[in-house]
Image (cartoon, rainbow, N blue to C red; front, side):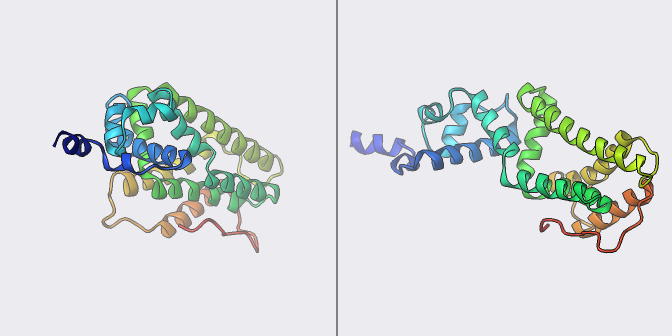
Length: 228
C-alpha cells in the first residue's frame, strides 16, 4: 500500500523520460505561461515544476537558477527563426530602397509577434512593471538595434530627397506606436469586438506612414509579408 501511495505522488510525466532537448523546451514553454500570468517575482520554480509534471531537481538539471531559465526564454525569442526571417526581409527591402516595404515590414512584425506569441508580450509587460533587468536589457538592446537601423535608413533616404524631412526617431515612434496600440488591444487585452482586421490595420497604418513621410508608391513595390 505504501508503494502504491508513493507512486501516486510522482507526477505522471516523471514516468515519461523526454530527451534533454525536448524536456528543456517543455520547461521553457511552461515557464513562459506562468511568467506571463504571474510575473518573474510571483512565480516559483516549484510552481513551474508542478505545472510541467516534474520535480524541481529536473528544472535545475537544465537551468542553474530561475534567472537562467528566464534568460533562456529571452534568448530563444531573440534567436528564433521568425526573427532571422524578418531581419533578412528587412535587409532586402532596405537594400532595394523599397520604402513602402520597409515600413510595411515593421508594422507587420509588431502585429505578427503579438498575434503569434501574446504570452511573451505579457511577460515583457510584467518585466517592465517589476523592473526586471534581464528582460529590460533585452528590450533596450533589441530596440536600440532596430531604431538605429531605421534611423540610418530614413536619414539616407531623406538625403536622397525620397522622404519628408521629419525627425526619424519621431517617425519611427509613430509607426511602431500605431501597430503596437492595435496589437496590444487585440491580442493582449482582448479587445476584438468591432476591431479592424490585421490586414486593414497593416494597410491603413502603412498608408498613414507613407503619407506622413511623403512616399509615393512605386510600381512593383513589394507587399509581401509573412502570413498573418
